[in-house]
Image 1: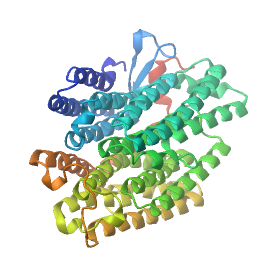
Image 2: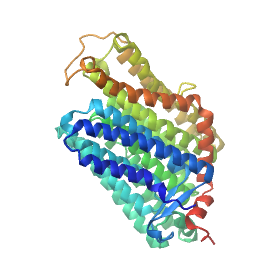
Image 3: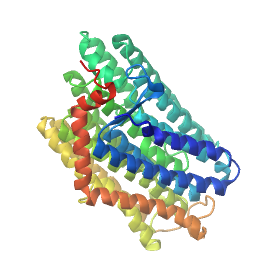
Image 4: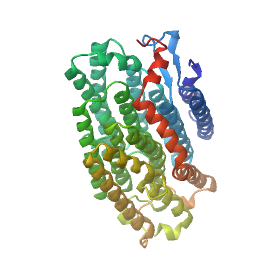
Length: 505
C-alpha cells in the first residue's frame, strides 16, 4: 500500500531541528519547542503503528521511481514499533534535557542536533534501501559526535575520538559490504536483494559479504570483541546525552542485523555458529565488565553490552520463538536503558558523584525518588513480572529448541550477574549509610533547584517507568506484537511483495 505520509516521523524531526535554529539563543523557547515536537512525534508514531497493524505494510517510493530503482521507505511493524519506542525515549530525554543541561551547552545548538540525531534514527528504521541505511547511519554518527563534544572538556573529546574512530571503521566495513552486494546483485533495494542474493552461486563470496556486515553492525551495537569503545566513551557526555545514546544508538545496530539477516543473509550454518558464540561471549564479557566497575555510567555501559548479547540470541537462532524474545527485549531495553542513565544523572545531581563507593543513604534522604529509580533498575534485572523477565523465557526456549546449550547457559549466567550488579548498586547507593556527602559540588544540587527544574528530572523518569511497567504488566499485548513481527522476520515474503509491488517472479 502506497502511503507518502510514512516519512512523516523523519520530516517532523527535520522541521523541529530547522525551527529550533531560529531560536538559537532563546533557551526557554528551544525547550518548549523541542518538547512540543517530541509529543507530536509520539502521537504520529502511535497513529502510524495502529494503521499498519490494521492495514498492513505500507511503502512510499521517492520521486515515484518504483523499487528497485528508486529509494524506498517501508513502514512495517518492526520499523514502526521502533519509531514509536524511540519517539517515547526521545520525549523523555527532551524533557530531562530542559532541566539537566546547562544553558551554556544549550546555546551551542544542543536541541537542533538532538533532533537531527532522532531524525537519523527514524530514517534508519524506515528505509528499505541498504545504501540509504548507510546514509542515515552517517547522520547519526555526525549528530552524536557533536552532542558528545558539546562543552569541549578534555575527557569528552577523548571519549568522542574513540567513539567516532570506531564508528568510522564500522562505516568503512559497511560501505565495503554494500559495494560487494551491489557487485554481486546490481541492486541496493533490500527486498530486491532478498530475491537476487539467492541466485548467487558463489556462497563463499556471499558469506564474506555477510561477515563484513556483521563486523560493521557488530561495532555499532558493541558486541564481543568490538565493544571496548562503548564503556570508554558513554560516561563522558552529560547524562541527557548518555541517556539517548544508551537507549538507542546500539539498538540501531541490532535492528540493522535483524533486517539484513532476515532479508538478505541468514540460513548459513557457519554464520549461525559464529553469531551464537559471539552472543554468548558478549553476554558474559559485558556482565563481568559491569561487576568490575564502580562508576554508575560505566556499570550501565557494560550492562548495555551484556544485554546486546541477549538480543543477539534471536539473530543467531533465528526461529520465531527466539525472535519474539529479541523484539520484546528491544522494546524493553530502549525504555529501561534510557531511564537508567537518567537515574545516574539524578544521582549525580543529588550527591555530586557517580562512584558507588562514595555514595549511600539515598533511600533515607529521598525515599519516593528512590522507589521511582528502583523501577528501571529492577526492570533491567527482569524480576517477575517486570519487563526484563518475559523476553528471557523466549530466549531460553528458543535456544533449547535449537539445542544451543552455550546460549542457554550464557543467558542464565548473564541474568544472575545482572542481578548481582544491580543488587550491589542498590545496596551501595540507596541502602548503605551515607557519610560525608556530597563529595564534590558540580553546579547546583538537586535539593536547591527550583520546583520546575526538579520536575524536569522526575517527569521523564516517571513517564518511562510507567511505560516500562506497562511492558511488564501488559506483557501479553507486547508478546502479541512481538509474535507478529517475528513471523514477518522469519517469512519476509509479504515485505518483499509490498515493496516490489507484484514484480516478484
